[in-house]
Image 1 (cartoon, rainbow, N blue to C red):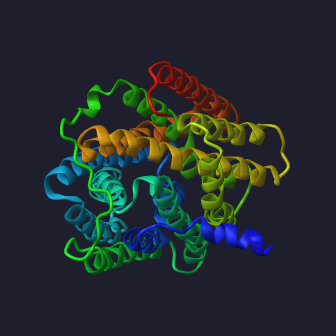
Image 2 (cartoon, rainbow, N blue to C red):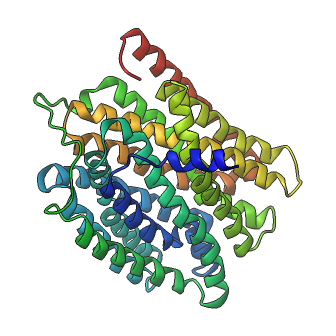
Image 3 (cartoon, helix red, strand yellow):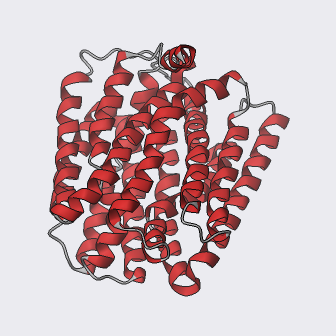
Length: 403
C-alpha cells in the first residue's frame, strides 16, 4: 500500500509552481461549473423549451465557443496569455450571473452565445500559459494536472449542484458559477503576474508555420471534432436519458456524473505516467480512448439493469482519461512549429465546433428516433473518428513524423 501511495505522489513531482497555481485557479473556476451539465434540464424543466429549442440554444453555445476560441488565439499571440485569461474569467463571471434573468428563446440563444464567446477566449491562452510554465518533458503530466483540477471541481460541482437545485432552485447555480469565475480571475491577477511568474519553456518559432497548412494537424482536428461530438452527449442528451429513460433524479444524475470526475481525479495522473513509460504513440493512445468511449454507449443498449449506467460511465471515464491528455499533448507538440496561439485556438475550436453540431444533432435525433437508435448513430460516428486516427498514425509513421 505504501508503495502504491509513493508511486502516486511521485507522479506529481517535477511540475513547476506556476502550473500548480494554474491548476488551483482552474479548480476554483470549475468547482462552480454546475450550470453546464444541468443546462439542458434547466431549459426544458424551468423554461419549458422543447428538445428542438434546446438543441438550437446548445448550437449557440458552440458558435460562441468557436468565436471565442478563434479570438482567444488571435489575442493571445498579440497581447499575451495573461491579459486574455484575466479578462475572460472576470467578464464571464458577470455574464453567468446575468444569464439567469433571461427567459425568452432568442434572448437565451444570444446570451449563451455571448457567454461562451467570452468564456472560451480563455482556452487558447490557458494552453499557451500551460506550455510556457512547463518543461518539455513535463507537458503531458502538466496537462493531466490541469485536468485533475477540472475534474476535482467537476466531481463536486454536479453533486453540489443537484443539492442546490433542491434547496435554492436553478438560479443558485448561476450565482455560484459566476462568483467562482470572478474569484478565479482575482487569484490569477495575484499569483501569475508576468512580473513574478517564471517561464520554463519560452518557445519562439523562427520560421513559423501556419496551422491551417499543417495537413496532419488538420486531420487530427477533424478526428477530434468527431470525438467531441460523441463525448458531449454526456452533457446534453445523456442527462435527459438518465431522467426520462432510467428515471433518475437530478441528485442521482449529479452523483453519477460526479463519479466520473472523482475517478479521473484519483486515477488519471498515475495512469498517464504509466502509459508514458510504455512508449506508445500519442495517436495510438487516443484511438484506445475513442474505442472505450464508443463502448460506453454500446453497453447502454444491451441491458435494462440500472447498474449498466455505472458500467457505461466507467468505460467513458477511462476513455476520456486516455484520449484527452494525449490529444492535448499532441496539439502542444505540433504548436512548436508556428504561432502557439493559432495552433491552440484551432485545437479549442475543434471542441467548439463539436458544441455547435453535437448537442443539436443529439437533441434532434432523440426527438426523431429515440435514445436507443441515437446511441447506435453515435457509435458509428466514433468509429469514423477511429478510422481517421488510424490513417493519421500510419501517415505520420510513413513520413517518420513524431506521433
